[in-house]
Length: 263
Image (cartoon, rainbow, N blue to C red):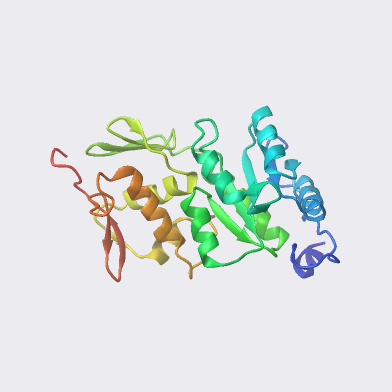
C-alpha cells in the first residue's frame, strides 16, 4: 500500500488517475474538514482519502453551499478552491477574515493556477497555506495536519511574552496591542512567535522556515515576506517605518528588544 501511494499520479492532473489510499488512519474523527471545490471527481477522491485517514469530511461544490455549511457548523479547517462557479476563492477568503466567527479558521487554498502572484494574493488575503494543483494526496494530508497542529496550543504554551504595548499570549494563541486583539491568521501568529522568541537576533528566511516546522513553505516564493507585511500592518503604528519587526537588508528579519518609548 505504501508503494501504491508513492507511485500514484498527482490529483488534478488527469481524469484517468485512480484514487490513492492513506497508509493508516492518523486523525481523530472529531477533526472536521470542509472542502469547497466544484470538481466532483476530485472532491470524491479527496474526501475518500481523508476519510480513510480518520478525518470527517464535508464537501460543498460552490461558495453558496460553502457559506451554508459554515453557517450550520464550524469545521476545524477549510480547504478552499480558488476558482468556483459562483465566485472567487480569494474574495471568499477576504470575506472569512472579516467575519468575527470565522476569521481564525485555518484555510488551505487550492488552485490549478500556480502563478506566484496567485499564491501571494492568497496569503495576503488570509490563507494559511496554498497548494497548487496537481498535488500528491500525501502532501495535502501533511499540510492539513501541519495547520491543525499549529491551531492547537501546546502544553508548554502557557506564557505571555510582553514587549512594551505588545503582548503575545501563547496559551490563547493571540497577540494584543494596547490590550486589543490583533487580527492574525494562525500561520502569522506562529511566525510572530518565532521572531519574538529571539528578540534582537537576526533570523534569515531559511532559519524562519526551519523554525516553522510543519508549515510547508516554498523557499523560492515570497510567502515569508507576505506574512511579515501582514503582521506589520496589524502590530505597527506605521508599517512603512516598523519599530517591532525590522528588516536587515540581505540578512533577514529581527524582532526589536525595545519597541516603545515606555518599554
